[in-house]
Length: 458
Figure 1 (cartoon, one colour):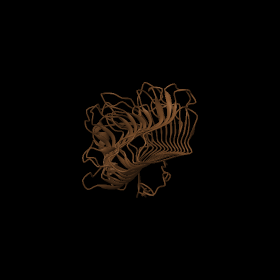
Figure 2 (cartoon, one colour; figure 1 turned 45 degrees about the horizontal axis):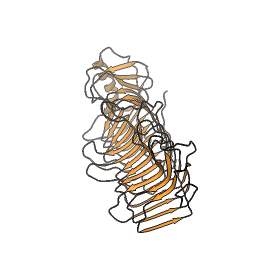
Figure 3 (spheres, rainbow, N blue to C red; figure 1 turned 135 degrees about the vertical axis):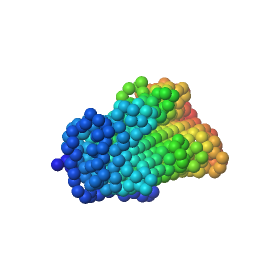
Figure 4 (cartoon, helix red, strand yellow; figure 1 turned 90 degrees about the horizontal axis):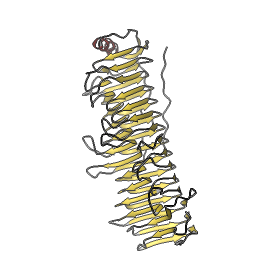
């Protein structure tokens, strides 16, 4: 007998991270087996499979057939569909579909689980999804192979306690996984690749519009490519596309691996944006991620966000164009610490825009940056602040072990900031034209115990 289980998702610990788990394991009453061979008629396949699903409980496919369907398969409440080694394929001409979905979008469903198997489609409609759920309480999608969606591999909207785990998603026109207005969810251990932007801006995981307390952890995302005038990315937290537009809150992005295996792609790494109305996403943590050869704008970009921590990430290189290691813009109350950034095409860490209130840049290692930009700094703050602001830059180590000629400055503060502290930093970027520390003197500042041997040292 086939058996599927899921371990408790990895928890990220933090003062604002509410969920202890996402979709807990539920029991399902009764087990039935779907033994029918695939029919040449897509309509017959739909009717036979749906009849099994309508009875509820656990439904297990026993055959490895390819079942072509021309309508949605709808999973009712308290039902676990186990596809095993079967394949579900959307027929040509099946139109705007979520090939596997839940049965009641209006009243909602509860306790729905989908495991195993392969889902793909022959449909070329730009709005076709492979797996899509709407208004479900306690939802799990696990251990699936999802191939060649015209838009999303998995889409979940307006749902509560969601777990999406251990899926392999390859080839999609928009996003591999996208969540809208979900509360308490875990997206973990998925392998996602091959978005081509044919149906939208392709990201491995997109957390969009009004999500609360979502953990995106231990995913591997690689080789999405730009196209059709749109841009690709690894993980996107965004609030400016779908309706209604709402900011996201309590999002954790941890221990993901985002990379490009070819410099011909321009996959962005991790991006967090606000919404078009100016509402800031809040309580965001980005930690423990590895981003390699990814970052058209930046390997990690945070724009219009409040209460953010970016720490313990490893950033190596960028893919193409001019991009930063870690880039912040127009954000409040943030902490950039203990990151290791090397070989970014521009500054290793760059703070830009109307940044205000309070922020801290500490204990980061920045090395050999600036191959695409003259007079590059390891860390730069370029911010005009409209009100009182406090900044601390401390205990960072800026080096240039690869002797990048463009890396000529260590830490550059070119900002209208009222209060700042620069202390316990070490700079050794080399070159006679180098300036270890360059700054604009504010009204109140503290400089102490910084080291570096180049001209312009304090």
